[in-house]
Length: 350
Ligand code: HSE
Image (cartoon, rainbow, N blue to C red; front, side, top):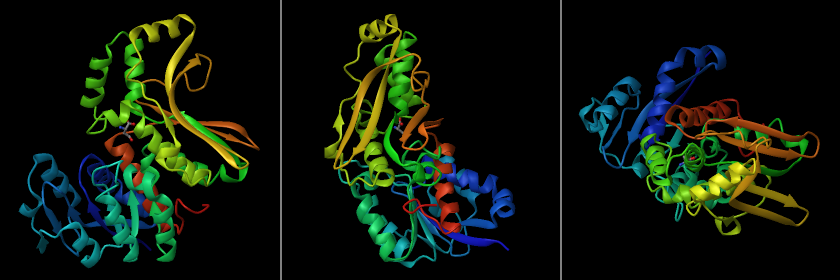
């Protein structure tokens, strides 16, 4: 027997298109492996309009239209022009996939969309770091009160299962500290500078490759990594931190001379996000650190991310994988959709 979930997608940029690609490419495997089907019923965008068909939209047509830059209203559907609150309120979607743009200052408008969806009794999956880093404890409470789930796997290490792993297999090992390379753009820049590129060229390339945020100052100043530190602290260490609790320094001051002197000493610069829990206290920071080449995080180059969990029972466990990308982040959303199907969420032990 196959269970079908209807999805409304708020936003249809890279990540939304990544999820749509996965759903159309892997529909047969999802049905066979997990007995589940996902049907996109609504798409709502800021710049290219919105459509809604309670009987389902064709993912391939949505992708074609998005790639051509067409407005979605040109597709055949019974309803068009609905804004996000109306889709959340009046559509027949079971899950709201919130992937509108990220605002790390206010979390808006995504924050209100997520609040509305949870209050209306709809599950939410999101890769949006703004509302998650700023208001996760409130959103988790809202989800619990309304007996629905909120999944945020795609916010940290894209689809690499950093949050699910910490919440499931490693939870009972007693995680006390998490540190890692949590931002692909800065790791790419540092790696390219080590290979002789200038800071400006390396940043331009990271933008061209699609890792950087629309405003890359969030990457290079360390704020994107700090948002991920807060999310990790909230979910994996149950620490109610906010962005203000994270001591944050980026990489924009690092010169070619700094890179060369680290190299000469057998070391390598990495932007490290860290959160550690101690009795009644904690440390949370993002800062560039010179690591000896033998350190497990030193060999992680390019846009790849990595996370090391320090646990009471297993010592250190390190996970290395993609930290950004359309299909990679789309996979994070799929992991949360499957967790909802299994009756689990990223805020409860799996
Ligand atoms: N700009 C982010 C990065 C994207 O470079 O890691 C993924 O969160």
